[in-house]
Length: 154
Length: 154
DNA sequence: AGAAATAGTTAGCTTTGCTAACTAATATGA
DNA sequence: TCATATTAGTTAGCAAAGCTAACTATTTCT
Image 1 (cartoon, each protein chain N blue to C red):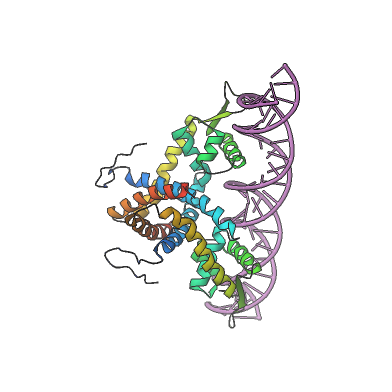
Image 2 (cartoon, rainbow over the protein chains, first blue to last red):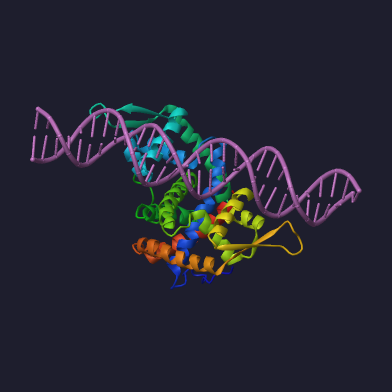
């Protein structure tokens, strides 16, 4: 599995983008499979956690906007929100003017859980990241930003 | 949403790992949601594609090893392989010596589809990656490697 | 030979994603 | 104004992917 890569870090010219695409794809799958188990431990799956995070930081927000932000269809988001609501992590309220729309906002409990969850995740990931050099963490940081941009355009 | 990051690229010291963890998590979710739609187009979901890829490049391989490689439980892999088999992308054969184990290997059709799929994915991703600089692609390349390492340890 | 371990499967549950079809409310325009 | 469009969200129903528990069939170990 020795990859042809000069120490300088220049990837081979030709199929570079394709190989990078493959590796990113595969890495994302494996990372999420690993993280899901972690998430389960405190009762929030990855999609719920992700949605809650948007509600906490960008909320109050309408269901439709939330679905768009999470790149998911409305029915899927309806169900995610229902789950979060039944866990009392978010609350819904009707819009005053337009009776079709419902606003979703985080409860204090939701906010607390997100923060706590973040700490837990950090504990798991930090112990892994600890074996990396600081420059490598910077690489991941930068990569995460790039991936969001790439993902938006898909 | 302006993040405090000096032009030099040094992330803030304290919560760095935690924030990076958050962003990586979120980016992985969004990337896969986007990619899945692409994958669907030629009939191979992300998990199947990932498994097929291992079979093509590391096969022949036993089901158990494949499950371990993909970080999935055996029943899950049984089902993935059954699906791939019914699509004639892989074939199974019993082990000569040990009758409990079955070997999985890619069919020519599986190999062809993987290569074709790779090209399709490249088309989609390349058009996105095209807007990035070469140095950013290198960042993603390096990040993918790091993420595999991180994921393995979760 | 009998007990324990191993490889894989089956059964059954949950979560997450989708589309299609629906309700209710708002906006348009003839 | 009144009929028609569009929009927001939900419900129903399907499929994929993940899990655990329990099973079969082998192999290995004492």
